[in-house]
Image 1 (cartoon, rainbow, N blue to C red):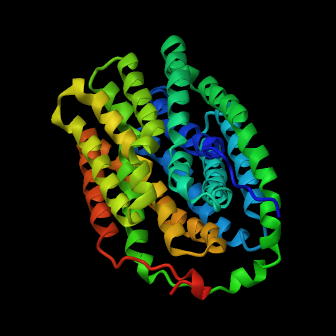
Image 2 (image 1 turned 45 degrees about the vertical axis):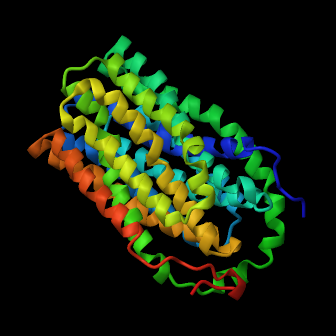
Length: 402
């Protein structure tokens, strides 16, 4: 079997482009399109929030189905299928304005994003399995690929909508799809190459499916990840709408959004030591608290501090899923990581499915500030739950997690 051990972190960045597509372009870019689509289509905030919920429902379905599909298909194969589904749905989203069409395409993009997201994290662990010194940084670099997608979406969508008006939202979706096609080239090629590294594991697929493992030591972290999914998505869905609601310019909103993405892309440098050396629950909790601090800044009413909010939020929010990847690596044998990642992604996705719908209803009834307060409460809960349970002990030497 050919060793996939790399000599640099570039492969992790390349695989992270899948996160840029599934999260940055497909999911988070909707925050920029939400005000325009709401204005052009006459939606309430609850209806606008539903479209992100449809994407998150697809994410739930993708995570659940991915957990079972990985019993039959290779991790690289499901990763590639997920990217293809996500990019195709992204390209087709703007073809029709009906809520049914938009909901269906958003759901499909969520399915594809979940497959590529969970499998991609496992591929990073596979690629760096013989490079312990870089594995933590590589994990962080992969999960913060969303920052690249956020920056790209801000530079594509906002100028287009500002120049052509709210009715240009279908073209903005098409532009995001074109960017997705270009970004997908490297991760698809790299995943195809990694199929060889999985050949030796394919023969033991039936054995892997029989491995018994308990989530008892990881249960509080699973609950924390669920709470985090609700808490962070409220900010990500409505922050640009809040900027516009306060009468700030689209250029200012773009600056906040791009800063968030740039901070997310640089976050692995800031958190490299924590991801590589700390117990993962501590990294999870601390990054939740940093995310909380960023989410609270807009509630001060000091609008000039909004860029600081975006930068602080971006510098920490994607470290939480990175710490989950590290947690599973610390606790599970390598052949179980992909399925465990799919299970954690399911909990995360359920939280993200609930979050936008609840946030939209709160925004209609109590205003956009209430959305951030609710998200803050859930982020506090996530930070506390992450460190509340026992520290999981790796049981790979026993062939199971107990």
